[in-house]
Image (cartoon, rainbow, N blue to C red; front, side, top):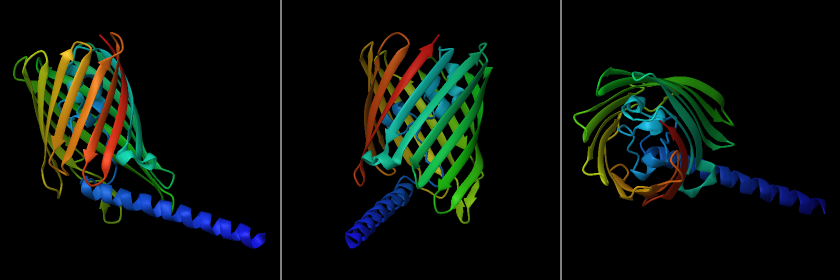
Length: 288
């Protein structure tokens, strides 16, 4: 009886060890393939449906990236919650929430919270953002982030990151944006740095039903990543979107549906031909 119990415990321990090893390997592969180091970044379900385009997204979607876009939207307050299951693995799940508030017509404040990973490896990020309109169609923003990296065998590490954003409009149909994140890398551990990148984005509202997006993203020491996306609104309550990026070659699809005049639901999925699908979902509240 004792021998059987010990054998059962040994098998259970081996299974747990294999599980941890598999997840750790996937994490390393993910970071390599997605070209990220340090804190993993999920910038909302709408962004996921556009193959991770984020620099030009406005309203409450801006709290996770280029916050300057918040001032170029008509909403005065917004809140959002969301989640993504990376490559359909519960251990690689992200949960997030955020909110923003306009103060007058020229200032806005935002806050967001992200958590990613599983028991043996977890990342937390708290971000505070401020945006200021400097011209009628031009805004600037800055965000400061407190990050916490927890690895069960190596303890905890806290570090700070920052971002600087710009967004503007050429006219009512064409807009542009730029975002720099953590341009001087923060050390997380020996020979490891947090992610640092620059984004340049453009959008074109072709008609009341169609909006085109393009973004060029460059991580330090990585190849440029070109992202293309389109949003189509067949009816007033529904938006459908498609996206593609060149690094690592991800296809994306999603939609938004209005539940009522203030609440909408996002559902999106990304597909990587090596690691599979990453579904995400989000719920937004907006008030004018």
